[in-house]
Image 1: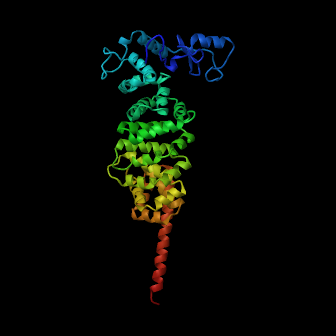
Image 2: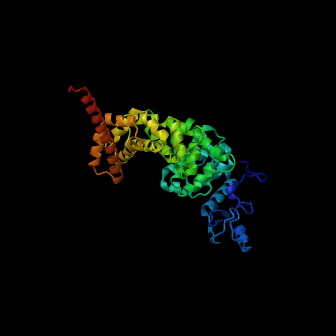
Image 3: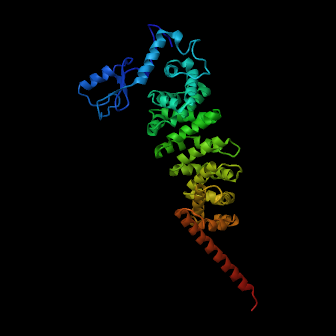
Length: 418
């Protein structure tokens, strides 16, 4: 940034939306938008009852001082007049020590105004966020910070390493954000091509980022999958679901597997998402995970949840029924992992054996000693829903057993001498 009387780059969020001048006394309306006190007071005194930026009708004309932004503007202003004492001077805090809040405020302003120092500024902010819940709360309350990070997703010019920093910083504070709807709108509903660009950036982090960035990218996607629209936007992003499926093979890192599964569960409820999973071969991938050893309880539960989800479609049931190893693995998890896993497993078995009446699946359940498992389940303290599905399955297998016996008796009668 050039610091002279002719040209000074001012962070856009320092400017009042009305006057476009740097705010001297920033105050926030009930809509969350911040203005300079004199400008917004003049607007309200003229009889207006709307927020100038959003045009929302104001429930109250009261406003509150934005102390954090005022402090940030003050630190930025001081750094212009005394550059030797800024966070970039040789006398500043060493890079590996924990930055102060004042240094963080200056680092946030530098993110927007100093392209040559963005990587270091973001690294400093990430160290600050990692240190404590209080620090993450502090960053979330900075109304400009999250939009600034999301803006980098929309237009990443710093290469993969900077993208890694952006995604990991976003992941660090995303759990402290209560307004998930607002976050979804920021990332997925931006104007023009920005929405596509943000998903492109998250996909790049997933494909080319380091291990931590991959996990962070998946967690961000999971966090914004809050409704049908967002789930479909993510699921139908070209290459994204297939990349997630590649990352849940047994040889991958367990933490990465679990986070990818959580994302797939989050986006899988719309029918189009289920169909996409089936078409991309999710059943075979999930079957391998079910058959793998040393898989955690939480991973097994999520795998079974996904299998149950795809079994709600005809195409998904066909895929499951054609994979006898998958059916056997599902039976094997009944009463063996957890009550949650058992419920997902029984629901899938009920879907393919009772609802779909697939004989191949029924045979696979029988060979895997499924009837004994179901009888034991009926005697356990299972939920009423699981008990009812187990009873339905027993009816199917009893009918099949009687049919087999009847067929055997008929054949025996035909060969007996008179």
